[in-house]
Length: 159
Image (cartoon, rainbow, N blue to C red; front, side, top):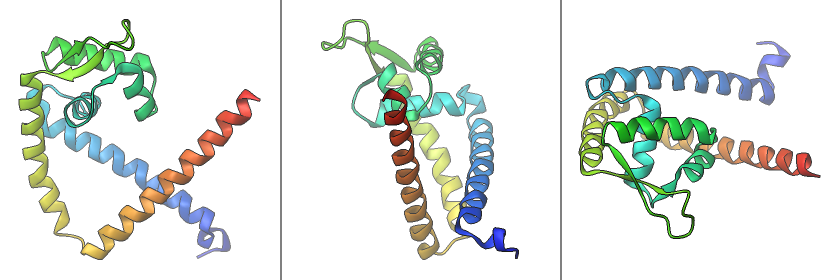
């Protein structure tokens, strides 16, 4: 291995390339797994937030997912058209309602989780517990470090 290839920065680059490739494969797998439900990976992500968390607005979901409000609005509109989410009054902000799951949305989300559980069990067969614990810790640390850099850059931009 070359000097560059063994540096920590090069290893982070390798890790981020693997993450992007893995994300694309995961997205494609999810799209295929849920194709009969007509739910894309983006739709699944918004439905998951609406189902598993506290009520949030479109801008709150967008900030949490680090995507544009317009993107989440488009996805939310598609979910609402399929009767998977609804918009509930937000007493704190009349023009920004909460995104909430409908009963159908809760049922579809539960079905997606059942399907995904089988895939997760299959994937788990190829790993030792220690590998998964270590990988999760590394990814959580990488996430925190990236978030710190982003916040620093946002602060620099506003000065």
